[in-house]
Length: 136
Image (tube, rainbow, N blue to C red; front, side, top):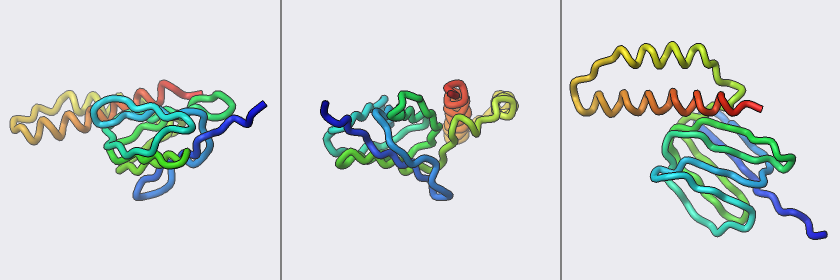
């Protein structure tokens, strides 16, 4: 029986490495939609949006990591995610996120730039909420 290949996945922020391990598959939030990676995938580089990176480990468990932009590189079964910010599902505090979302709902920006910034902050809260919902 042939040996099953795995990916090696690294998720890194400027502050620290967040995840480093083997995976059967990775799904990431590219800037314009989701991208999936399996062993043997062609090399490529993708711009990431804000969302959840889902890593299926060799034992079939799902790891969820919220990411806030950045880049994903695939090369020779190595997946590297360089992101501004990342939070693993087990680090998510649902009550604090709800409080943050309630506070954001009270903001009433008037300028286009302020509305864009508020939308980005809301997207980051929602990504962390989705990651927290996918706890093992």
